[in-house]
Amino acid sequence: MGEFFENVSRYPRYLISFTLGVFLVFFDWIKPLFKNPVSAIAVGGIGLGVFSLLYFTLRAMLGLSTV
Image 1: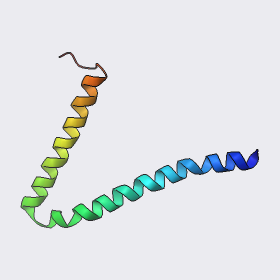
Image 2: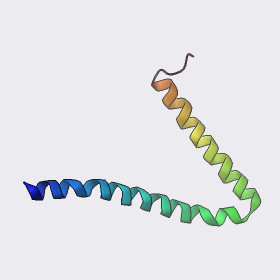
Image 3: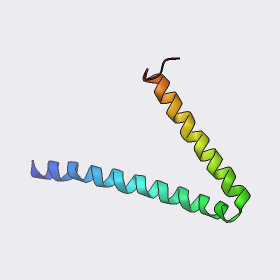
Image 4: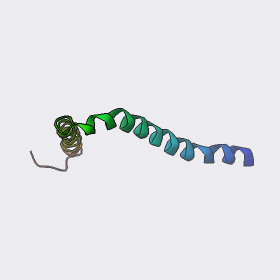
């Protein structure tokens, strides 16, 4: 039974390392775009747009706003 809990305790570490790995790979892919000011503004605008889309979509789906 102790081996079971040892295996279960590994999953949060795996989730954290997997998530950090995805973000680091994505950031390494985006990092060269920040050298050019025009592309940096475009990446920032796209990021803000994606965040806004997620925010307003989840807000409407959860019924937190009156539409």
